[in-house]
Image (tube, rainbow, N blue to C red; front, side, top):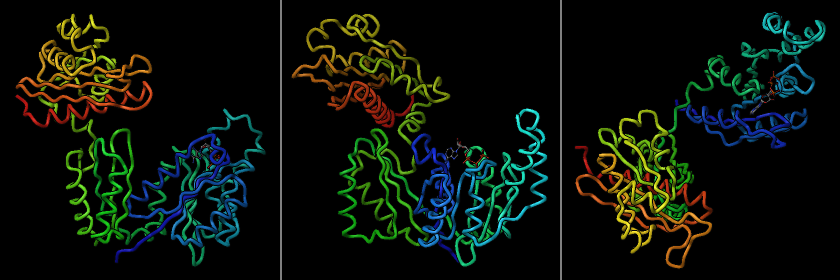
Length: 426
Ligand code: ATP
C-alpha cells in the first residue's frame, strides 16, 4: 500500500525568530523528507518559550500531520524546554533514563576538564538531559543531548533533534531507523519529479503557459513550483505515483512553447552543460566589461584546466588592440562597445590561445558612460569557433553595475553552451 504522509517541522530558537541567524535545520529537514516522499506543508520557527512551542505542536496535530520534527532546545540550560513541552504534548511524564544518564556522564567526563563547571552543576545538567518522556525512544547523543522519538496517542509521531545543525544532521539516520519512524515511512513512496531549466525566460511567461495548459489538462495531481535563480528559471514538477501521464503532457506542452529557452530537462545547470560540452576542446576568452568574470565562472569548476586555455582582460582600447589584435580603426569606426569589436575580440582570443572557441564580452556596465545610442546595460557578445561558426548577441541589461556584469556572465555562459552544442569537437 502506498501511504501518504504529511509532516510539520518546528525549528525552535529565539535567535531564529529574532532574525539573528537563518534557520539551517528546517530547510534541510524539509529536503530530506521531500526526498523520501513526505509532504511538508508546514515549516515553523518558534521562540524558546514553553507556550509557543506547545501552540505549534497543537496547531500541527490539528492540521493534521502524521509526523512532527522539532529541532533545538534539548540542551542543559533553563531555556531548553523541548523535552518537557513534547512530554506534555504526548501526555507522558518525564522520567529519568538511567542508561542515558550514564551515557551522558561518560560524554561529559571528557569535557569536564575543559569546562569550568562545578561537579554539582554538571550532575544537574546531566540529569536534565537524561529526562525523557515515558515510553519515548531516546536517540544516542551526537553532542551531549539525546534525540527523542515520542508518540502522542492517536496523534502524530514527534521526533526531536538537537539544534546545532551538525548534530541534527548526524542524528538523522538514527531517527529514520527508529522503529516507529521506520514503520511510519514504510509505505511512503518517493515523489515523481521533473525539473526543467530555462534561460532568459520571464516567470510571467511560464505562468501564462501554465494557465493555458491548465485549461486543457487537469493539473491538480501535480505540484508545480517555479523559481528564478539568477537568469535561469527552474520549473519543478512533483507528483504522486499515478500522475505520470499528466506530468508528461505538461512537460511536453511547456517545452513546446519555450523550446528556444530550454536549458535542460534533468535539472542540470548551464555551467554543468558547458563543462560537458567543452570537454575535448579549448576555449579562449577576451573580456572587457566583465573584467574576467566569465573566465572566473568557467574556472570555478574543478577540471576546467582541460578546456579553459585562458582569458585576456582587455579593458582599455590599447589592450584590445595589443593583446587581442583588434584593429584600432575598427574601434574608431564602431566604438569599443560594438558587435564588430566583439567579433574581433572573440576571434583574437581564439587565435591568441590557439583555441577551438573564442568568446568575448564588451559593454557599458555603468553607472556612467552611457550614450543615447549605447546606454548603460548595452552589452555585445560574440562566440566564434575554429570551423567558422559565429554566434553574436547585443543585449540591453537592466540593473546596477554589478547586476549588468553578473547578467553578462550568464549571457556569455549561455552563448558558449549554444555555440558548443552546435559544433562537435575536432
Ligand atoms: P545544545 O545542547 O547545544 O544546547 P540544543 O538542542 O539545545 O543544543 P539549541 O540550544 O536550540 O540546541 O541551539 C544550539 C545552537 O545551535 C544555537 O545557538 C544555534 O547556533 C544553533 N542552532 C539551533 N537551531 C538552529 C537552526 N534551526 N538553524 C541554525 N542553527 C541553529
